[in-house]
Length: 73
Image (cartoon, rainbow, N blue to C red; front, side):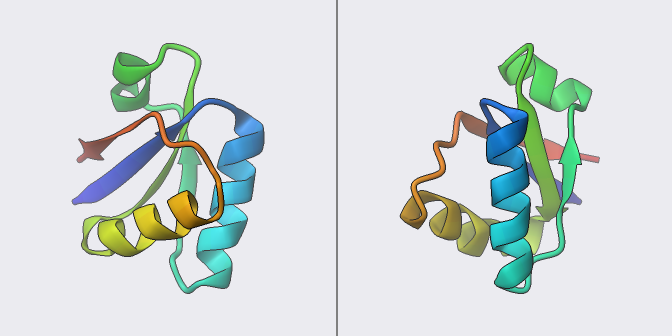
């Protein structure tokens, strides 16, 4: 299963993806239905759910604002 962290803009999604990649977390930028349910025009980064805690901490500690998170099948 995948976990998605929802962000407010494509700029934050790109920054998040680069940060995660530099820390060993492979992710994809998404605008899936799950993201649209939380924020209509938001973007998300999707990655393996086992890496959720690590990814969330990296983003928070880097000042990237997180709107929410959801599961994606």
